[in-house]
Amino acid sequence: MYAYNVNYQMNFNSMYYFLSLSRLERINFFLFGFAIFCIVLNFVFNIQSNISSSIIKPISIEIPFGQINYNESIDEESENVIETTPDSQFLSNEYSYTVHKGDSLIKILSEIGFNSSDVYSISTQINKLYDVSNIYVGQDIKFLFSSKDGSRIKIGDLPDNLTIHIDSKIIDGVYNPSKSHYDLKLLKQTINSKSKLVKGYARESLYNSAVSQGASPGIIMEYIKMLSDEVNFKRDVRTDSEFKILFDYNETSEGKKVSDGNILYAYLSINNKKYEIYQYKDTKGNISYYYGDGRNLKSALLSKPIKNARISSGFGMRFHPILKRRKLHKGIDYAARAGTPILAAGNGVVQVMRYGAGYGKYLAIKHNNKYSTLYAHMSKFKPGVKRGTTVKQGQVIGYVGNTGSSTGAHLHYEIRQYGKPINPIKVKPLISNPLAGKKLIAFNNQKKKINGTLHKENKIMLARNNPNQK
Image (tube, helix red, strand yellow):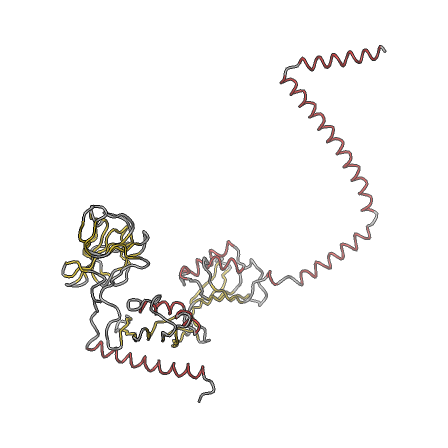
């Protein structure tokens, strides 16, 4: 009874002492107790771990013969692995790669299996012989690798011999260990020029019909561009529209195409109207295109010197949106995104290039004694173009902007005849001078040769489509 009273008294005193502590002292008391608990718990787990390890150790010692046999089997298996190393660990002797969007030579070499530390060095060396920035989507590049002794080359190792076929070029190299790089040289490759005729009807689309016969997208787009001043391909071409395209291309002695050439002849029958165009190459090698009678395909001036644009304001009297009064609008406004390239409407010389209060940044070109053109509200001029610069039709001279008296990004375009503004839309096409004299004679001779090629290719096409026909 006495002991119980003593314990009760001690517990009461302890409780009284705990309650007399401040709040902060109580928190510290609990933290101290929790720390002691963690230490004890960790000590218990360590003891259990030591007991477990002491139990396991004797078991491994009791079967030494099993260990020896197991190790021997591992050695045998590892020997087999060496003999059957997967092909994925070696460079293939030959790689054929088609360039995709976003590819670079560095990326292609990395995908083949070269180390990142080597691809930049190899690409830099190749760039001295071939501008690697010129690779394009759809281009085929062939790589050949070999070692001196004919052994296989592991991924990550540099081959002793490296050969690259790209376009019409062959780049051959031998690794030089003393210099830690390849000694590269450019080899000559025999390239033959061939011609091909594609023809038919638009059916689903002219583009698809031409592609199905072997014309490249580049040739088809050049054909469309050639006739775009005369024909609206989206609106006018129908399923019964007949087309013919004769073009040349380059191929290797093995018969592999390496590049497109140029269109030699273009034909289109549409809306009961026929367009027949021939290539003409002058004495300097410059290529241009003419109708069969020697008339120039290109007009002297373009009525629309910008692509992907719409007319937002026409020529004539109008209510000026900024001046708030009626005023003669001396040109045509083409609404387009800021930065859209502006093209020279024709051959000529830049006469004016400055900033004007109303026109903003503008440029004027004199084409001859009769005609001049003006381009206003530009965001900037094309670098390299300045006053006195000679420009050619279709050359980029600046970019669409919103400078001067303007309410939005657009091109203000004027054609002036003897200094007087005329309507670019209603004016009759300004035909360039037709061929005459010696040039006309040379053109007719070239046309005769093209007609001969056209006849030959037509016979080949007929024979291919009718193999039983004699």
